[in-house]
Length: 363
Image 1: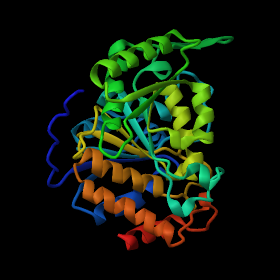
Image 2: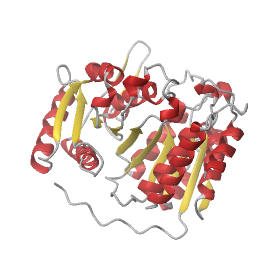
Image 3: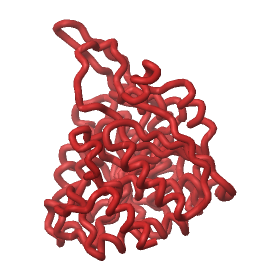
């Protein structure tokens, strides 16, 4: 088993770069920053990304934004995208800004924890008895695969290429195995692929098997085809501990887990340049809610900021070495929900401001 490095000490006054982005991004980031300031002293600097950056500079990831993120202790992202399709394949797209940022910062491991709140047992499409006891983490490889391979489009055809190297698979496998080895987890990794069809998946399966057997023999490793995994995530989600998969499969499956949590608006994520230490801290991580920019409700005060607030908790724990503050934020969200807080995505009427006040009061 790989020995984790010593945890970094918590930075006295961490530098946070906030990237509000597009659509509801500015609203949910503003809410989450209020919660962040309520639990500590932070230096926050805002920069544009996505469509907002294209409007200002012509590029979805301006150089100043990237430079600021590279210097930061952590980055908080809202959402990008306008909901419209540009017919010009050469035109810059908002989503390119996030992809370029992940690649430039070496953020190859995306963590998406799923742990339903007891108060929301009947909020989602799954029966409460099916989601009881669920505590899983999806570990998605983030800088390889179909989203980064060679691509082209012509008038009557297009192609996207999925490529992976052994080194890319090895390093994300170690992140998943380190997480599964932690106290409180169940020492089980489920690797998801499409090895019955794809050569990249066969390489993926062989590499994951070798790394787990040599370096983490204490773990139970299983393999599932992606279609089977998609079914089991809704029929037996409690059977999963750490789910490891490649970029596109992880993108899809982690959104599916919204059925377990009750809403896509509740899911946080952390994108890291390595495995987080149990005591907290991988400097330079990117933290963002799983949901999109939802331009149809932007500016109306209806967006739930809870996914972004919970992403702040991940930032405190995995990026800034402040696990106690992370626990406080997560507990505050749970208390607010226990007290009856329900945003529109959960069948309620609480506005973005209502939600922010409820979480702050619970702190």
